[in-house]
Each structure stands twice: as structure tokens, then as C-alpha cells.
Length: 355
Ligand code: F6P
Picture 1 (tube, protein in one colour):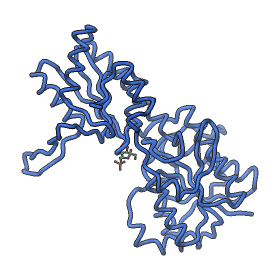
Picture 2 (cartoon, rainbow, N blue to C red; picture 1 turned 90 degrees about the horizontal axis):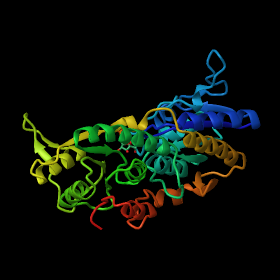
Picture 3 (cartoon, rainbow, N blue to C red; picture 1 turned 60 degrees about the vertical axis):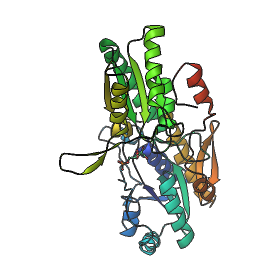
Picture 4 (spheres, rainbow, N blue to C red; picture 1 turned 60 degrees about the horizontal axis):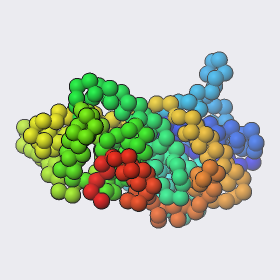
């Protein structure tokens, strides 16, 4: 009878609890294993802490809320000096008597846990999650689809208020150095301009496009989706000195909106919405629940076969497994400028930078 651990590491996202639920149910019902939840990722291991997940959260009416709730019941961290604490973390794994550990994390967390696993002979299986969708070898990571839907919903709401006031709405979205979130949500939400880190933009190009929308199509409003890592080819000066004399970095959304107003001689009125951590919240979409459930089940099956240091991945509608070494050495995956979705955006007259 195996004893396995589960942890969630790095930024949270919708669908983490659904992975936990699937893994616990399959491990318990199909294999009769003992399943421990490690709180706060490496912090829990470090302290040798764990909670039993064998009897898990049915509410008083017998409803299992894990499938549909956001966040992670185990808590998560994305800080800590894991290199300095490596020995203690490995000792925690040994102390808990684990046969294997399911690590639900993005490429950063998987890389850290993979190093620790090599160093301390820990058996790990990875499950990819991140709203950035930049983990190599998987078409989808848990959380991405829900975040895309959240952004699309916001774009739809913003379109109506933008149209009512003839305004340009600049919507800043997350994604770190990858533009997958902005590109997917921008296309699905009908954005007029999509600015992603991988394709530099010019503010003159953005303004020209917005002006053309007015002149050619009588469209008096526009939606601009800007990824937090977007870069201009003109060189951006986003630093400013605040009233206390501190040098600060202006958010890219504010910067783009200011530039649009300035470049247009204040003939274009722009407003900014920074969606922020709203993108990480909410109930997981149906696709994320399906993905999370398939991944949780597949991770347990890998452990049953003693097939370790692998990450489950979604490729063309089926779950496969990939060595974590390969995943981490090929991540993050960025948007290629010849990506079919870039071609689609361009074909629909969306400004996506100066290619
Ligand atoms: O990697 C997920 C992500 O949400 C990024 O898109 C974003 O840049 C970052 O995490 C935000 O991190 P934090 O929650 O630490 O502010």
C-alpha cells in the first residue's frame, strides 16, 4: 500500500482543487493508497507537515466542492530559498514516509522540485498548471482556459461601455513573458489591438490602426489588449519619479493609454483596466475541470507504474507523459510570430505589432 503526497506550488489558478480531487479519489478508490496533502508546497515539506486527504471535503449535504472551487485547499507559495533549504525539504519528504509526490505547478516550480528530486531520490510526478500556458509539451495547462474566459467576459463588458462613450479601452492582462493569454483572449473577445511580449509594437502603429477603424468602418471605439510583458519597438520610458522622489515603473496598461492619448493629440480618449488577479480567480471552466480531472487520474496511474520524474501533458486531446527534465529545459514556451493564431488575428485586421 503506497503513501503519496500532493502539493500545489507557485501562483494559484482555477482547477487546482479539481486535480487534488481526482488524484485523491482515484488513489483511494482504485488503489486504496494513503494520500497526504502537503500545505504551502516546499514550506510544508520543510516542516514535515501533512494533512490526510483520504476523507476529503464533502459538505453537509454530500456535495463535493473541490471540482468547482477556485484557489487551492492546500495553500501555495512562490518564494523561499529552496537551494539553501534543499536538505531540509528532502528530509521532510523522507520523514513523511512518502513513496511518491504529485507536484501541481508551473515550469518554475517543476524545475525546483525536479532538482530536489534528483538530489534527494524523491519520486515525483508533475501536473502542469498556469494561467500563462507557457509549459512545454502540453497544449494546455490547468487554469489557462478559465483565465481566457474571464478576460473574454471582461472584454465583452468593456466593449459596450467603450462604444457608448467612443473610447479606447486598454485592458492589461497577465502572462509574464508569454503572450498566450492576451492572444487567445484577444481573438476570442474580438479585440482590435493585441500587444504581446513576443512581437514588438509601435504606438504609431496602434494609433494609426485605431484611426483607420474610425475612418474606414465608422468604429468610434476600440479594445486594446496588452500583455503585461509587451514591448514597444520605439523604446519605452516607463519609469517616473513619484511625489516622494521614488523612481517607479508605470504599469504597461497606463503607459499604453497615455501614449495613445498623447500621440493622438488627445483626440482619442483612453481608459485603462488592469484585470490583475481577477484572472486567477473564479470557478474552473468545464475544460479546466476536464483537464484537471484527467491529469489527476493520469498522475496516479504513473505512480502505480512506478514511472517517476514525468509530467502529465495534454497533446491533441489525450494525456501523455513527458520527462520533467525535458519539460523544464524547453520552458517557457513563447508565442511564435508564425503561430496560427497570430495569422488569424492579422487576417481579421487586428493590429498585433510591427512584424
Ligand atoms: O504565473 C502566473 C502569474 O499570474 C503571472 O501571469 C503574473 O505575472 C504573476 O503570476 C503574478 O504573480 P503574483 O501572484 O506573485 O503577483
